[in-house]
Image (cartoon, rainbow, N blue to C red; front, side):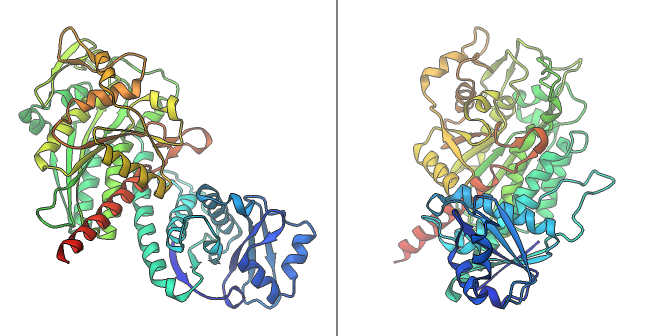
Length: 507
């Protein structure tokens, strides 16, 4: 899919289709009004006749519009103008993309980027159009013998900017949007692969492929023997029931100065989670292939950052394993020693994500990180609390949480902060070890984060619980690629701040 930006009048576009907006009730957008004047009221006459009300997501395809050079004009309903916000805009773009793909318009010029959204400039609209169109047209059909593809799919989309002086910022927005979209696509592809293909070894291979693709990325893989030598007893306890060997992936992106402390992203990589001895119900267990979406989001974010060439250092840490029952599997009541030296009584083997993350968090200390952010499909309790709309956010550092929430808002990849109070720590008490790995039914998302917090005393840390946002079920079953947009926006913001601080020091 090719995206470009252009400034020009709609009647002069020699293209398969021009895309314009119509507000409710039957009111043309400013660009549509201009085209209507050129066509001697052709469009407004159709609208008045009742062919299109302008409700959000409505469409009307026009052929042979007089005094234009395009083959067709696609009108998209935008709802009421005063209600047009971020989410409505993305729905409009999604509808336009799927309609263009269905009608066989292999190229189009889109003027929806000229719609007015409060607080959003043209660059934001261009970038998020690229991301939304890519998301709308995504298909995972690698494993199908017969692929259900459009006969004449959309291949090129030109995005309009009102003024020529906005072309440069528009082109940069396309570059950023494409990088983020590519990162999301990689995360989706990895998440959608079944567990018999996307094993811990496969994840390690993909990380090494990134290192081959981008010179700024260096990857090292630790095997089971390396983990045993280090003393990662908590992580290895999860892997005991599987014949698939665990891997521990470390990928360094060097885009900043050599002495800049890295942002460390830790992604949960359970490539299939049966629950272990505390086995899950069989219904929807196939969706437990998505339990490595945290790991996928780390690789997706590294891809986006490398494509943008961000002047920042980022380290991705991925503990990868399966969690299966077996003759050698960890049993409820077993006590293991973590890399930190703290002991853990495993009361529930299905609370395995925190067991692999705690060793990865301790390992992250050696990088002297600026901040550490872990990303994990960690608790069903988070799905109950926040549904599929927002990821759960908990942190031991208020400024870091604030920055992540701002990035979530800017990217549209929303998060919601939950408390990390010491009051909840008592739920993790154990009679036989330093802590239990579960804290009971109450506040399950929070007690899981409280467990992880015991391994993050030496750095600023945030935890993103993506159990509700990493994939969708039902007819739309599949990985979402979240929170790659949130993480990428956070890193963009941080790189921008670092650049500004450096320039301020020079003056």
